[in-house]
Structures are given as C-alpha cells and as structure tokens.
Image (cartoon, rainbow, N blue to C red; front, top):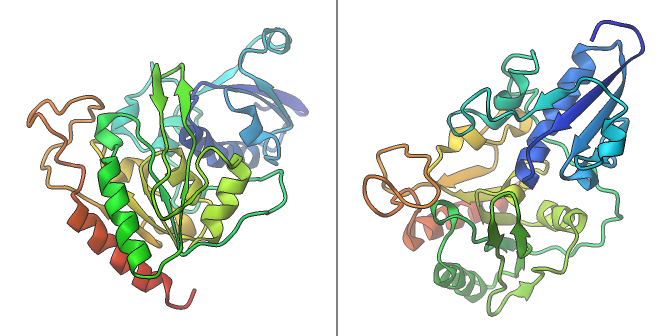
Length: 292
C-alpha cells in the first residue's frame, strides 16, 4: 500500500449486519492511514450497507467471482483463522490484522450512510424482539410484559426487526410484534429502521445488528447482556462507551462465550430477568427526557 494510485481490494468475510457496520471505522482508518491508496474495492456479503460509504469506491457481492478475478491479492478483514473473535473487541479483531493496531475510542465511532429519504415516525420507545441464539435472546413473554408496562405508562411503543434465515449461522432469526405496540417488524428497510431508531426516545434490544446500528445514532439504548462480555461489542459514541448506553446484566460470574448452552450452570444466567430490565429501562427513560 505504498505505490501511488494503488487500488486496494478488500474481502470482508463477516456476514452479519453488526460486524459489517464495525468494519466501517476500520475502512475509514485505512483510507486515512494510506493516502496513496486511491481506490478501495470491497467484496462483502452485505453490499447494500456500503453502497453510500465514502471510504469505499466500488462494492461487489462477495460471490461475484468475475469481479474478484480482476485482482491477484486481497486484504482480508474478519479472518477468524487469525485471531480469537469471541475474545476480542470487534473493531480490533479487524484492525489489528490490517496493520492498524487497536483503534482508539475516537476511531471506533460508528457511521451509517442511508440511501433512502427519512420517512420514519417518532416513538417514545422502540423495541427489537430479535430471537437468535439462546445466549442472546429474551423470552417473548418478557418482551410483552415490558411493552405492557410501557404502554400502561402512556409511552408510544414500536417494534422493529426482521425475520430472516441466515445460511451462515444455519438458523432462522425472528422478530415478532407485540400486543399494544405499532408493529414495524418485517415492514422497514434497514435505512428506515435506522431512522426509526435515531428518532426514538429509547431503544431496547438484545445485542445484535440493530444494537450496533444504534451506535451510529445518539439515541439512548438499553442492551440486554449475553455470554460475551459487553466490552467486546461496546459502542464508542463521542469517545465514551457509556454514552446513553445501559447494559443490563444478569447474575453470572463467568465468561463462557457459548451460544447454545452454558457449560457451567446449564442456563444463561448472564441474561437478565424482567425486574432488572425494567429498572434499566425506567432509568434510561428518565435520562432521555432530559436535555440532549
């Protein structure tokens, strides 16, 4: 990456929305660190996320073999064979093999570049009921109890998310609407989901792609804990991982990183109960009502 006018082809191997969003600060640092690179060509599972990204000049689907044939060597981002992904901060997992070292808090600021015009409504609270692995899913009955408590308090509540099948994870990831709430599940593009979260007074979610997307906004967010410590997927808005961010923890005293079953207790104690989540949501709503 020293020759003037060099093209840098990059293969981004992650498929999840959240991991792809975390690649954007790495791409931004690459462009700033290597001004002689005049063109970045990205191959990714999620080309729509990078369609308006100013740090990329051309975007192709990772399966576009004809386009890939034009290049001899690639920089690989998100190489799970090189470093232990579940034990690392997601940004650093990509930046260190790229020769950038650990990114600073400032450099880890997330960005999102929508292509659509903002057509979103504003709600007091937006919920994401995403059900994926047992280690990062909250029972739907708990989500409904939370929605009932919020609407009883006079809050306007919407539910966002999509039900999709992930061939990479070999599982269906579901998001369901809740009684008494505006059901926006499976109705919004990612752009409109972004606008909806950005306008909300509070966003409540498990850790997933939409919790990462929230990192590109200033919205108050409550994230339910999981088997991977929150510092590994922290948001760094305004150089502060605690900025309008609440992680509601369970009662676990280990770090297992497991997705399907806790190897010690037989249940994921890291996932919080309803009372802890309600306390976190109530405190976050009080903060969100203050001056921004």
